Amino acid sequence: MNRSLIDSYKNFLDKGKTERECVSFSIEEARSKGFVELCEKESLKPGDRVYYVNRDKSIALFIIGKAKLEDGMNILGAHIDSPRLDLKMKPLFEKEGVVYLNTHYYGGIKKYQWVTMPLALHGVVFRKDGTAALVEIGEDEDDTALCIADILPHIAQEQMKQSAAEFIKGEELDLVVGLTPNDESKEKDKGKKAIMALLKERYDIDEDDFSSAELEVVPAGRARDMGLDRSMVLAYGQDDRVCAYTSLKAILDYEGTPERTACCMLVDKEEIGSVGATGMDSLILENTVAEVLAKCGITDSLTLRRCLRNSYMLSSDVNSAYDPQHADLYDKDNASILSGGVVFNKYTGARGKSGASDANPEFIAKLRNVMDKNKVKFQMAEMAKVDIGGGGTIAKYCSWYGMDVIDCGVAVLSMHAPFEITSVEDINSAYDCYRAFLTL
Ligand code: MN
Ligand code: MN
Image 1 (cartoon, rainbow, N blue to C red):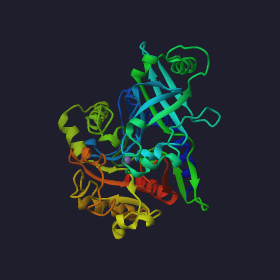
Image 2: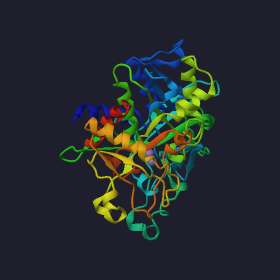
Image 3: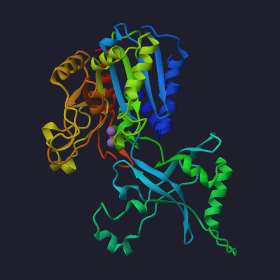
Image 4: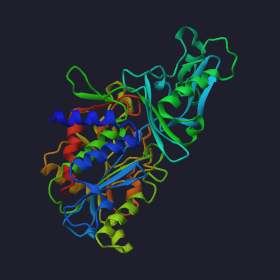
């Protein structure tokens, strides 16, 4: 097993706690592996390695293949956004001695999991003149910590009677960032003003600048080995950065010129339905591929359509790992087991497969063949029992072009929790799988 892959993966998680941080990291790694930005190239030829950045929150990397582009590409697609708490546009307020930052959660979370733990603020604030402040508070152990408070059990009888969905409400997820100075002054909002002065000093921003900010509250602390046997990784944001990193690394480590053009797309907004200009439910893929084709001297839309239609894609996204403590939620024969290898999931979606892309069996047969040839350990699984529920991925937005696509990623325990668990064997298996896929 490749332990250095796990160390470099943990480093990626530590450096990439937001989409923008993941994109910056990817650019740096790509450049060190000979990739250049698409706009730096006059034209493209087989073997060329380029990347294309979309609004600093998604990135696509390509290695131009020997075959004609209209014959299709091999695409690895993962998402680099993760569940979290975003700051509201007017977040700073003071209430009876305590100063808070108000949040609005992003993605599917169990709200009660986000209280009483060290949290960090990561992101960017744009001032009116267009300059930006890069914000990171509470991440470094030597820096100050941030936290959301909860009620003492002794006086929480009423709270404890409520359902888990209710007992911490979205509106109560307010980050404690300071206390009102206990001095003689009767000045209104003096606590809030004092905190704003500290932010001004640290980042040269004013309160109004919060309205043009993208600030994300995430669990503080580094990714760690887990278990006495170090068989797992415990970290924030492994959905879906575990697949994003192994996909990125698979294309960066590809040597030489592939037969079919290799592509790795790392996109934003999957956790809220792939919406927006940086999510997959936009023309992001089509527009990016059109830019690549243009550099190859191809500008007609029919070739673009054929290129997308003839592509193969792995929607590199995580699957819910079988949990022996909650066995009744799973059909064990069709569940993904930790350390069972990378997971192919034909049916994502929920209940009657709503929201699924339902991969074609002809395509799955091809994948089984290339996985076996490359000795990749894999498992076929669904998320949970049929009536329990499920979820969608970016797969359906890619299948829209008629390409062959299947969900394929790492099994995760405690998915969407502040700290998620993966198996180091599965991470290695995903990397092997994505490398093999690029040879298809
Ligand atoms: Mn995901
Ligand atoms: Mn998710």
